[in-house]
Image (cartoon, rainbow, N blue to C red; front, side, top):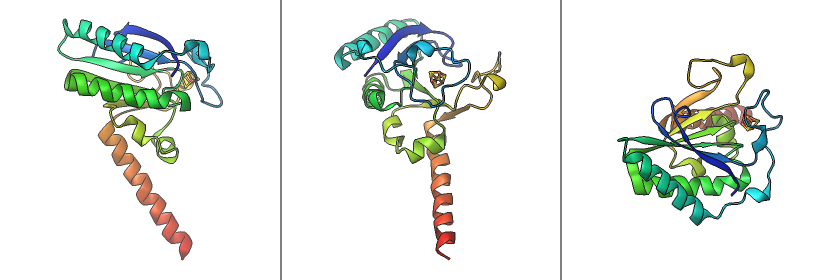
Length: 182
Ligand code: SF4
């Protein structure tokens, strides 16, 4: 996996202080207008970080914050955490952190992908240990200065809500398949 940076953050989760991991590499085509992180676009192998090192660093930073707060967040941003090279690490790290800290750490994933893309690209299995999502592109024309998420078109939903949306999409796909067979 490719990691651009790991930082303490008070702005990436709407309620919780936390740690934000910025993955390196973005597969959005075209790129979002006025992207805040163009330095994360390239799939640059010089940003490779061994998993063991990443896990230890994140554990250490979360433990430090949990001395001060009851609950904190672990935020995954980019770049694109669900890009091919990063999604395996996203799954492994979110699973390992949830098994260590359980409800004391809320995992939050930012992705340009919407639920339909997560469904069509069969990515649900990579986000099983993500509690909350901000889904959809950042669009300057929907920028909202004081609200969360920062772009009004983005969906802020839970894993349960994502599953519900994908079930509805699947039902509609089955209906269309039935209609096409008439
Ligand atoms: S998905 Fe994120 S990193 Fe990629 S272009 Fe859009 S805002 Fe920038």
